[in-house]
Length: 201
Image (cartoon, rainbow, N blue to C red; front, side, top):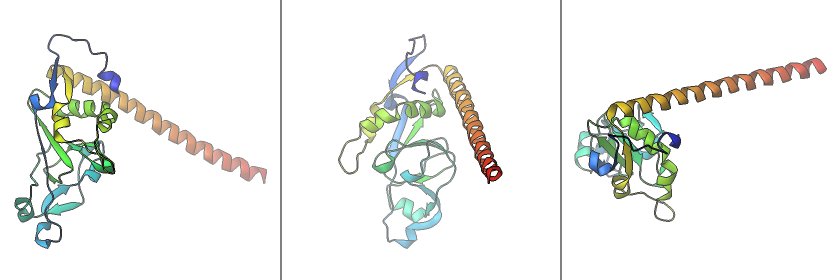
């Protein structure tokens, strides 16, 4: 998919901007564990392990209003791009499809009106390996918010962003259809082999 962003012709209207120039970034927080009154509330609380490199529609844990207020957790709006900053899930992404809070291992990116969050999602997905490679530390490598903020993004006008998104999703749909056809063929081959074995004995 990186081909969609490589070999970019510097056409009129394209800009190469750092994240901090067109988006707001911040991380979440974790209410103190062991405080029962902070958990099992009504506020969704997303952990980095919930991120799935796609749309995020639900999470397993919830916190209370008190837990939110007594920690650095904050509410992210639907449409926020989430990225895992460290641990086994470093670099993993999701577009939040509902209002939720997150833990501190997640950076939330809120774009301005000139950027389609899906475009930014696909761009980060295309450089995910390079981003992970910038992780620092030993047992638990991490990318900090500064690395995210300094990431340079090639940004065409909004309408062109939407055309790029449509093209990527069209290609993905072809891949998905190919995978489905391959799985069907494998299943039929397995059934055929079983039939041959039964006929042989």
